[in-house]
Image 1: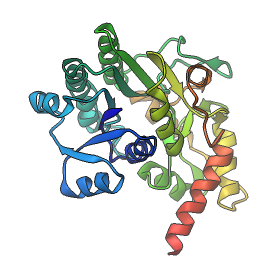
Image 2: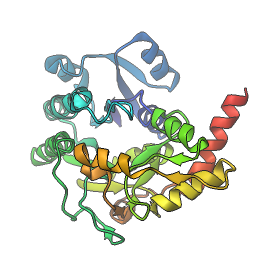
Image 3: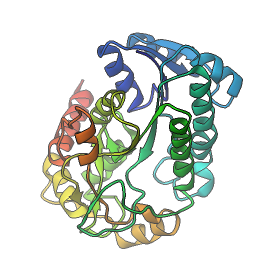
Length: 308
């Protein structure tokens, strides 16, 4: 299948492009620089230098493709995320960028549109399992996510198959956010907000990429893409401690949770997200069933790279 990918050079994106090519698809990836174009070529795909916010140019680039995949985001660094203005670029990508891609996909006669979303937009459910029918929480930071999901629904209403992939918090050896977590975990802190008993959805970037490929054959709809066993923050801190050879890693101080809850309350809630619907609808299953398997793998890769 001829597939157009936006966000194909990010942490999930380059892995998805690689996996799509290996699965036999003819892949074009949007780029904004020659260095990124070289990366795309090295993965076996074709670069297309296009401004995501130039609607006519996007439409021209997407023409002839049967599937369009939007993995574009611009998440601010952890300590900038509390500032509303730090999310402006990411919001524009999810609102205007997603709209341009969905419009281009419809104009091209594409049969499938896949949109990246987040699995941490649900209300607090304690230790109860959450599926895609569970109600969302409305915050300033989830409004742009809602807009992107609405663009996907609009594509389905045009006659195609729109698929929303609600990813858990992804982690990978080349992720800046993972590097930050590891840096502070080495100092004895697991700096994720929330009470120690709250559940969080997580997904290794490799598993997120394989889910993108599987989504090409899934029915239209919304799917949680997270690992099989969400852990509590207390359990996650213990996993990081063991992987780093520490006796203990403490959970974040309460002041961090109070600070985050003022601008992103969805990030401090307990969300034990189930991936059952996507596993039932596709041939996907995570390589890393939980952080217990994934974190040691990432730490090993980071330490190996640092020793070179």
